[in-house]
Length: 286
Image 1: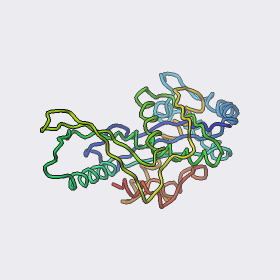
Image 2: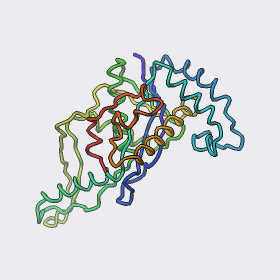
Image 3: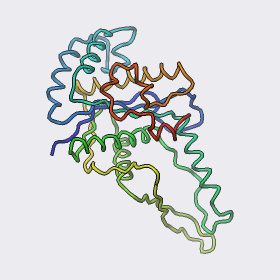
Image 4: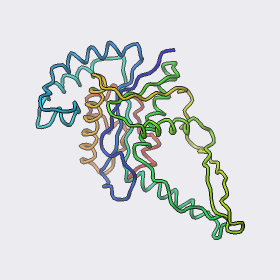
């Protein structure tokens, strides 16, 4: 069965959540999704455009460096117009307001604390694990790739980026495992003052009301590879990030996955999973 390839890159915020983000800060992962049979053809077609880039004095071929001070803008426009008119691929992205995500996580923790017993028998650690923005972005991307696998009749996904470390790879696999579960189990430990011993247990939870379970992806591989397609994905991600930042500056309210958010974006007709009812836009609104 044919696999789905997803060439991606990130733009904006991606570190740990904290309350110091501004209301207009966003994090984004975006990329090019296509079936395996088309990878070679796409790469060859894109190489004909990117081969004309002026890369003198550029150490790494990233969008920020390639187009600094107005350099190579003609090549960028040519690539984007090619992608606009080229079928058989989809632009899949996930964007987040870190401040909104922080507030949502804080509210969740406050609700959990509110219903904890006042004097619990077992003393657990009060240190909370910080959520990384990148992990939240990966969750959204994997859920959307799962839907694409349903459309393509595939169970295998290869995610390819020009820069990814072992920690991010591990987080992606943990995220996939979490999203495949109906019931989520969190292992915990605590101190029992009566016995003077460490005790261990687990907490089970289940999300209802909307479906975020991964049902179709059984094999997820993440690779670090520099290619024409990964460079193109970097350019797409950077261009979409700048577009969304510009749109945010024009209005006080913007749902990041709404049609209004991308209506003026050059690749709007290639974007999958756009709509005004995207649940994460509601949960993570700033």
